[in-house]
Image (cartoon, rainbow, N blue to C red; front, side, top):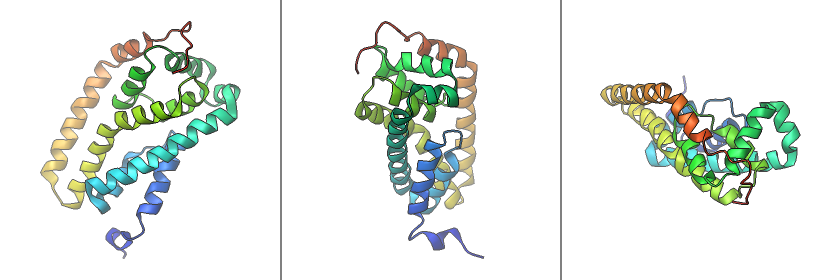
Length: 193
């Protein structure tokens, strides 16, 4: 049987590809890809692979949404949901909202890349904020893969406990968090950001 380490010399290519696909097909989870990336390449290598894939995937979804337009996104994701997120991304607090969406676990993230493409927000600030916001979650997944590679089961257990606590807090406060994000919708403020 082949060991995962035997594919290390070229495995980064499919890992980047799968990270891109995970963002384009936004219902797929990204954590298994990140576990594998850090298992093979450590935290720094895994982070570079994950972020490279995330950047490419975000650019693809942003421009794909521009190409498809509002009507297609309404059909795929639902008209009210898309309109609500477009209002958020066209508000004065768009940068804060983008950061919060990406940093808080459990809030739909990669769907936001599509909505950004039909909003007034420019790609560069959106890309920067989404990468900064997603980085803590990515690093958590990468730590898990690194601990697994080193057979550090105490580290894995601590990471699982911390993750569960964070997820429970976010779940417990989800209504407040979503209200906080939703409170920044301002349909009259459709400025270019």
